[in-house]
Amino acid sequence: MSCKLFITASIQRTGSTLLTGSLNSHPQIKCLSELFMDNNFDKIVGSYQGYIRRSFLNRLMGTFWKNRSIKIFLDELGTKPKNLFKTETQRRQCTHIGFKLMLNHARNYPAILRYARSHDMAFIHLVRKNLLKTEISRVRNQVSKIPHLFVKDKNAKRYRLPRVFLDPGSLIARLDRIDGQNKAWQQELAKSRSMTVYYEDLAKDPLAEINRIHIFFDLDKIEQLIIPTRKMSPASLAQAVENYDEVVATLRGTPYEPFLLSDNNL
Image (cartoon, rainbow, N blue to C red; front, side, top):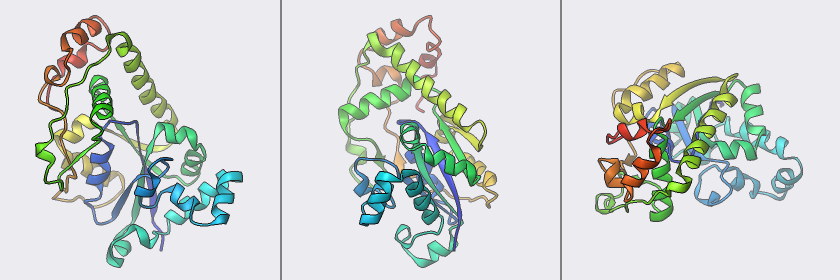
């Protein structure tokens, strides 16, 4: 019993949890979290570090023959391990298993991309156009320690996320870095079977974007979507950033100034 593997490729704070959670609305898709995260791996079902610690042989392979270890891990993932599913019916229905891959994880484990290319795995490249909002989300996460607000959390509406301070002295460099990371993923995926999904389009019309992925996978469209997360950002950038006037002055006349004008609730 095997299935097709795919990867959702992105950088941090670009809506990957919304994407992967929404993909799980389709009965034939199982989309997992960051399997190659080195910290908090014990909280991630099916993680590579969990696999490594499963046995002495796995630890040995992971230490001295990492490329071989990753190949075996991904081969096993393609067999639909029972621990990934709540019921046997879900396991039988599943035809596609995917997982999040952040750029830093891809660089730490280059064998993943080699395996993906040699096995013609599909990539969903998630990009957030507004780099400024990506940076705001990163800083807010550092301050609040709340990475996501989930719909199932009854207290989610009560959370008051803090306004953030963006250091004007390093802001341009931070945006350059985010832009460089997006371009690095584009370059990595240039020769792979991939499609690009923009966070702004996903947030505006999630069902349409998710069904576009289903077409890419040659799966039937769905009519109803289960959206796992609540929106965290306030209505405007001025509400989100406590030194908004400084940020405006810093970005004026730069390639990043248009991000101030796309001041909507996405």
